[in-house]
Length: 141
Image 1 (cartoon, one colour):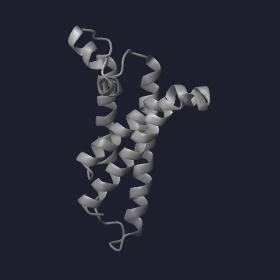
Image 2 (cartoon, rainbow, N blue to C red; image 1 turned 45 degrees about the horizontal axis):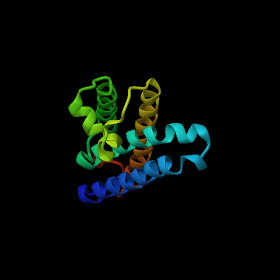
Image 3 (cartoon, rainbow, N blue to C red; image 1 turned 180 degrees about the vertical axis):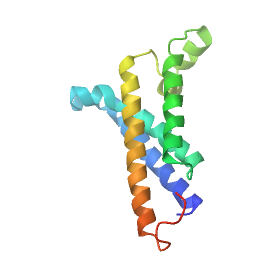
Image 4 (cartoon, rainbow, N blue to C red; image 1 turned 120 degrees about the vertical axis):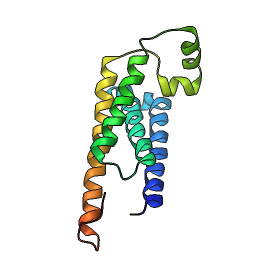
């Protein structure tokens, strides 16, 4: 698949995941408690993975996943730091959605789950696409 199409696919998937994540926060009262509590963070990490995939669509899945989990971990650890400037940034809607508010150990499990799910789906979809390609699975992916 060409870079442009692959990037577009990752971008569209990221928008869908973004919408699902926002919906999980907005309509959490209608969801099972477990899903309402953890879906947003899990989907946020998946969106980070997809965003990195938009930027580097042909990088190995493991590399994109590693970058995504490192970024998610850095954001979570940054929540231990409280200074007026970053707390003011977090108090905005966009700042709160991107940077979060407070460190939670459970968020790390959500991030690992979100990135792992994205990486697994990407790996299996791309390996299936390579196997079905006319080149017999020799294209890079």
